Length: 281
Image 1: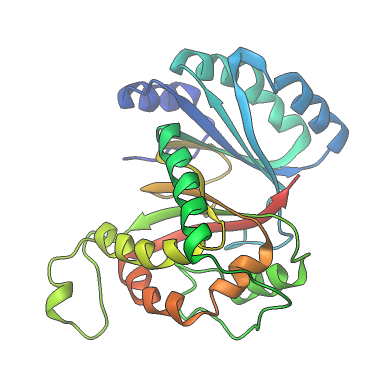
Image 2 (image 1 turned 180 degrees about the vertical axis):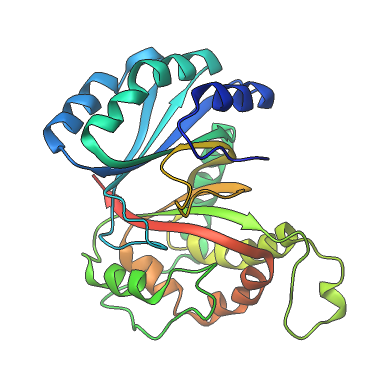
């Protein structure tokens, strides 16, 4: 899959049409210049072309690989044509009130998937749930910041209100073949996606027992806006958007012994990740 990094609507439309999507979503990464014009745009566009504004998140005030965003929006459209019509009608206006805007078009996963995950989370929490209290320790730090939040992101994340709901944005690029340190039989001919799935089984249980779970996700199709040096200008494989009831749930989870057992699989399977954290706007 090729990612387009300029506001080339014709090329982006062709890439979207080639995917043959029945539903289409746009994920906006916005650095806002004029908040009044932005709020007007939000009101004008919320229900345009039968679209749904699923999430609006205020990002933590910290850059990821030099990219600083104020807000992340996710809009979904029930048909390809509605999404393209929305883009034609309102996409250009972003230039007027944003210092930077980058839009990721994705093919969303079926909504039933996320309803099922939510139900499974409720079930696991009922029987195997855990409650995080107080201020978690701050010992965890990533060695490979290409696939984990960096130290500055974690410093800012820990300084926010721990009681507030947290959203974590993950845009993953998998290695063709997993790279495990200390080669063993179980890691022979394992793809990056398979290694990440091993991580997901371990980390996923720790999420679910805290009432956290993915609320949205899908396959990246194309990226437009921004500039050539934008850190999102890359081939990506999967978009995952996770909701935690409280920010402390994430901070406590990453300090847990069970979570640490899965880290090796994430390190082995991912080549890069774009990651942002934030609260509901």
